[in-house]
Image 1 (cartoon, one colour):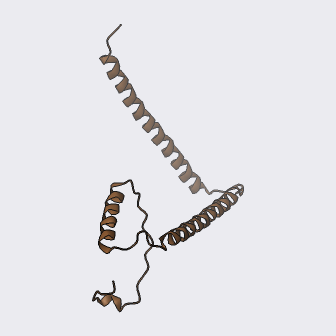
Image 2: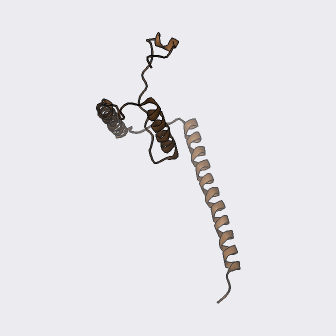
Image 3: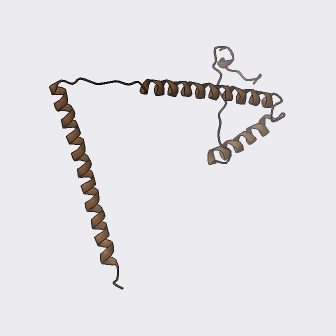
Length: 138
């Protein structure tokens, strides 16, 4: 504001902030809307500002370009990943120690799956028994 005394007026190395997007229906959006209306009433003048619509449309176009570029980059990365994953590795020669490690890992994984399934089965059977006890015979 022109009449204020502030040391901020001398600093020209300020950073521009991107507009804040808040859902108007949310409680934060409603609070912000009320605050802005009160601030506009105190400041006076025309609202929305004459250049606000132009600024908003430029900002929306900029966001669409950024989103399109991001989607293109993601698509490119996924295409590269599928091309790399379709390569045939061929036969792999393992040493005896490697075979032991792989077989131990496989056995451990199978045991872990079996134990998990056994535990889940015990819990389900217990719940079924409790449900059957609570039912009245017909």
